[in-house]
Length: 223
Image (cartoon, rainbow, N blue to C red):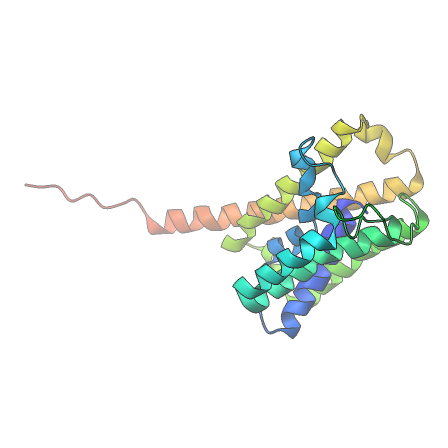
């Protein structure tokens, strides 16, 4: 699955589970959790993509550790991370017990495919409706200090996309419009990136507003 689906399903699952656990997981973390397993792209060729970070033998102990350390907050965040394996296994396969075994499991619905397009674009639509219902849209509507942290998710999604395309010699413009399914997913990515960019701007506005309202620091002059 592409980063659009990973981030949006992670938001839906981790924020939803957080509400059930009576803990509020920040929006940027809810979106970022589902992208984290693809951070192995940053470490190529030391770590091959879609190996260690896509295995239950690695992510399950990590999730248990996060839950133990950060309690309910860590539990909600961990569910977002694990959602990556679930969604990847729907459209493709994952090496579930790597490195102990190279056996892969999954439904292999296809990437790209009509099923993947529905899952990705559908996730974006559900996430937007969910944000309207739970009030998270306010972080994009007006100045909020927490919104500045959206920049972390924004930079992650943009750089991972560029690195993946570069490693595979894929011209992004050609790839995006090579099939209707990919065009829809690409437009979804644009919407997501613009939304995260808007959130980042609102965070910067909040920071600048606080700085201006605080006024210049006072200077005590010794007589």
